Length: 370
Picture 1 (cartoon, rainbow, N blue to C red):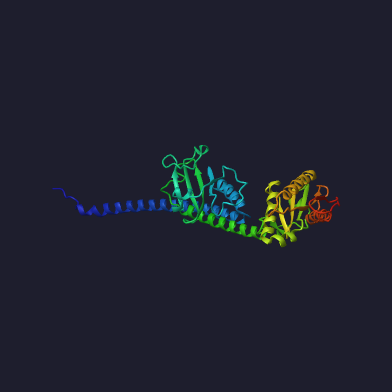
Picture 2 (cartoon, rainbow, N blue to C red):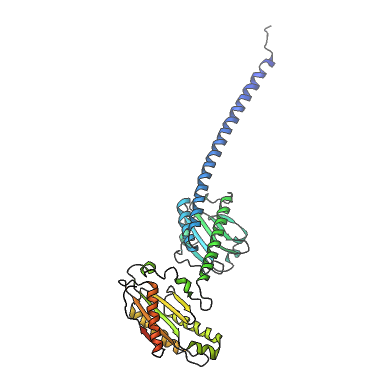
């Protein structure tokens, strides 16, 4: 009989071999996992670097409109998005904010309650795949989009808008993905916009006359001793009208201050009907107002003054006629007067009109550069 090797002698060798193979496999998986994590960390580091740069640019923006414009530009370029769009509630805190620099591709105004009706107020971020979920706020020009992230701006109780980030890649904003980064972005944008809107409102209140809604004298302070070209640009002619109600103290004494306030608002409303929304109308004090008309020829400014003069005189207050005296001054691009000088000339012309009986217009003589 031939001798056989004991079977137990081979078993330790088989076990060690299997253990070595398992360790090698575990090491390979661990190296792959570490490589994946390092790649992800590297990608996240780049992502957060871009986010910090975006936040810095947003915080450096001067006003809400500039901030939104910066966000649109930076998000498109830094994050390779196919759509970046704001939907703002026109009845919210942002509703009265100037946004003329943004096109209808960038901003769409929505009505009160639309955000809540869509359920967007209950979510910080909503990820959608367009072919599966759809979204009614999309337009025909957005038909190439495959996925979108909707970021609520404002609190759940008081949302003021939604920021949409769209991509032609359906996996870019897959609903199964984490939204931590996008939630952080939404909070930063919300807080920044709310702060900018509040700051702008406070700044506007500081230079706004509470009674008439016109600007006040503080509005002129940054420009008062500057040439007109530093405000309105080179090569721009500027006309100034100076208004003063005739016998205003007597009207106040006879009819009361409430009627006097009504007269001032009537005057301002009449003026606004004949000028552009951006033409500065400033209450200089009491019943005196100045109006600046950039890029306006002298004969056009005089025509505006004549229309205001006629309309004010045709509207009696409590049965009594009222009138206004108006002075007109003009600065050509060659003159480039200082703002103070231009207004002073119009003021002096107004006093001439008042001295000649009121209810008339006087034009200041050209006095050259101040």
